[in-house]
Length: 312
Length: 312
Image (tube, rainbow over all chains, first blue to last red; front, side, top):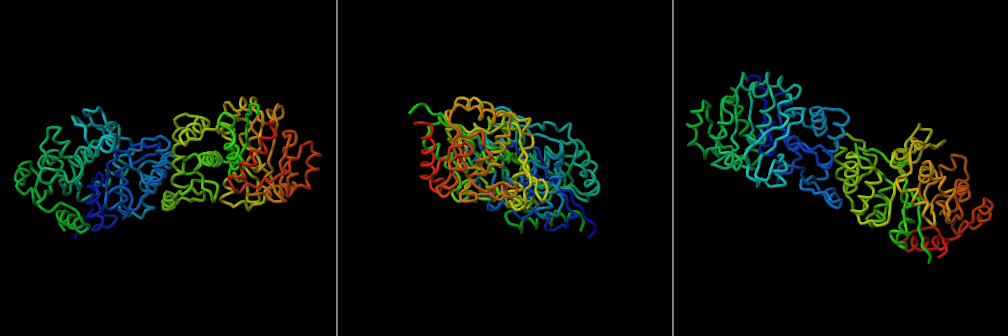
């Protein structure tokens, strides 16, 4: 096999599944995962990066296998005490998880960038593959809804994705720069992989950082996305609901249209085989395969099938 | 009984015992506890006020009955994770306890003063008696030792009070002001009570805040201290060791001398009855009684005996 270098783009739980599969097949110098920070939030004065943590905990083998986010076996005693102090603790932070946010906040306050903090936390947890935030500058995914403007976590967790969405914007994106090294990683990569994450809430913010979409447009290797939609519904999260509310087709085709011009291959599920020709008509090669990743074996096998596209 | 208003001065665990006894006997408007903040520290970017928390948790009925500090039944999972991040976690912070420091830090960063934060935390935990930090400005108790200059918690916890002490100073004290309302509380009080706390590390910092010692010198009510020393040794902590290293007599007499001019009555233990005349010779009335407070009944009874001096 020729040298392979993969840059993967991921949001939270769904994206982390494929990132884990890739990390099981690729050596540390062969894989970099670029992670959405559009739903970073300040809780109780602490800087929380939900997607970075989900990917980091997953690659460290520490994530909660039931929920996909947070740490396995974590307790929630600090949160209970915060409630005693009258805090609305709508965002669930475990005690061990809090240590991550405490340490991140401390390092940021000492002047470290989010990239530097991420590197340090990953190193300490034994994550050897590279995890990069999409940007060191703050970008905030904001949904326009019938309950008003809602930042992503407020929409997703506090409002349980219930309000109807009529628009999504990425506040601060135009002033943000790709994280240091990110464009270098992309220029050296032989393959770009869009993990099965929400196109509007996870990959949208990444693509909104000036320079990243352009680097994908001129990318010299193979660009592959895995659909987050199977049979007309999102595998998890509100992707389908939001696409419907935005007037988009809730299907792999609808997602493929979002990425037109940025993709060579689009992996859709066996169940959606009938959509292959429509995807081909967008100028994107369809790859019909099993994309549901329930077990670690599923994740590794999907990673292997994707990597085979790189010409192994 | 005439109106009684007590201002008590306290450090950590020892002081909190008598403060609890007083709180069981006095109504909320009859008791204010002024607490040392000379060993406040920043841990992992969080503002920790060990003595304020000990007094607050004790009066809230939440303190750990074994150690006297921290919260009963607390867990230490965040601390374990901080260790994974390579942090030297020499200061033990429980998960529920962390919530206090997170909330305090958040409020301070939002511009609240330490007094305002303390009031808010106490209110939320149902503490009805007034707890005041000695000052809203930072004062730092620093020990000169054979291991170098050590801030109080570093000396006490990290170095387990082992280095030999040749001096104690209260950095920042000359620029500090008594917390808002503190001098008013003192001017309206009918009794001032020095809880059995370390004279150098707990009450020393309070007395070093300009205005507090002066208010005690001109205090119109009865001024009573309870000795932290029984039979030539401190009831807890390094008070005896430090006094010896500073060349002071390790006895209730030695402590009384520290407070000369500020005290009317000094409560010493039955075991130290032979020291009564020496204390009297300092111009301080000795009160020989049981001052060891093992049970809540001990605390209440000692409080009642002290309050009787106020002429009930």
